[in-house]
Image (cartoon, rainbow, N blue to C red; front, side, top):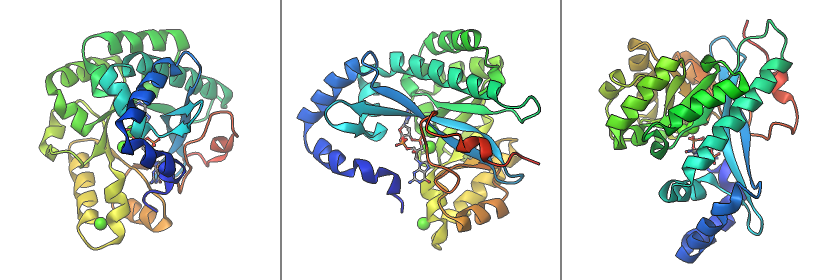
Length: 282
Ligand code: C2E
Ligand code: CA
Ligand code: CA
Ligand code: CA
């Protein structure tokens, strides 16, 4: 079940990883992917575990290769990061996600709870002022309030380039953007680092969530992360929730928010409006 979301990519991925020539081909194809309209965003619901209801979405990048079909972000995001293509692509993602959320917000009744969109940001995008310029421009162009924009930075990415990550995060936080530390628990940093990071949200990696079923310490890790995050005034999102047992356990451990196939897989914005029917918080 752990790799359920990857099954559709598995065959191509094996071939792909087998050869560096394929990587060169992919890199070449990725250079023109944005201009050719092959990139799109899917949106996965994030729910409030304690009160119930939808709180927002995570935007996830998709690439439809003209010959190979769907390529997993696990395979092409690293290429986009290494080549620097993630910088222009990342600008596009921010604009696209903010514009989509603003459209949804405007379609909802005035008394409906606020929705947020959470956008993944690569460590490479944190260097210099470009991300800050893009974020300011995107908010101005789309009219989306800063409070509705969350940015996800992986724990390992933040640690890799801590000084520039911290500087950029502080400015973003000052703009009213919510910073999330993604894949928490997978890096080498300790919980004490969390004190320094201007991040309001911690996202527990799905490996811990999905490992909770066995008696080997994953549940203790989840419990500890939730307790420490709360002690520091942060909220916790559990990733990769696939079963009701996981959901119930996380709720009992006082985890705040969750996402996973149990609540909804990532989907294109126009496929249907199932997200509208998720019950809203009481
Ligand atoms: P991530 O940020 O940790 O995103 C969560 C991944 O878990 C997504 O994979 C999502 O489809 C998958 N997922 C969601 N619920 C479940 C579940 O219940 N079970 C399982 N097994 N998986 C679930 P995806 O879309 O393949 O993305 C993989 C990674 O690629 C992301 O991990 C992120 O690191 C990167 N990525 C995706 N989109 C972007 C983007 O727009 N920008 C950047 N910089 N990275 C991105
Ligand atoms: Ca993420
Ligand atoms: Ca994650
Ligand atoms: Ca385990």
